[in-house]
Image (tube, rainbow, N blue to C red):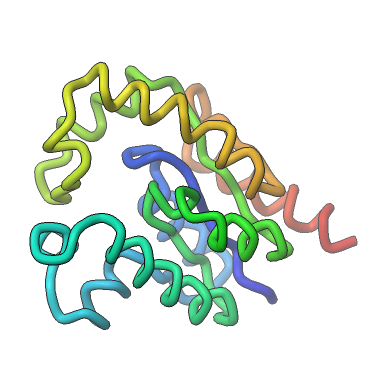
Length: 171
């Protein structure tokens, strides 16, 4: 099996869906943010503070190139599509799934998730986050083979849609 890569805005459910999908497919789950922290030996927030977003995106791109060769379900960071090289890597990959949903729902998830510190969400107003969300929509679309709107679907339905679409793309 080639890896399944999940992309989407922060709070779109990439980690939650990815863990369930990996369990269903009996393959490892890799969260790019966790992978980044383990490789760089510091939190993403600390890396942002120390080196800035540009350096973060460069490292993120290096890690993505390594991860795309894994036999796993991979949940990327929400901004992975900001880098042209990343979009090219993703577009060349056979199974990239964009998890999307209504901004209001995603914003509520971001605000209620106290376990994950999201540097960009903390420094932006809701209006600025909405602008970022809208700007990234085209970039996610460019990179995705599969688009799943998670808004009105149960977890089981989301998993089923991804698996079905993946099987169709492999045939």
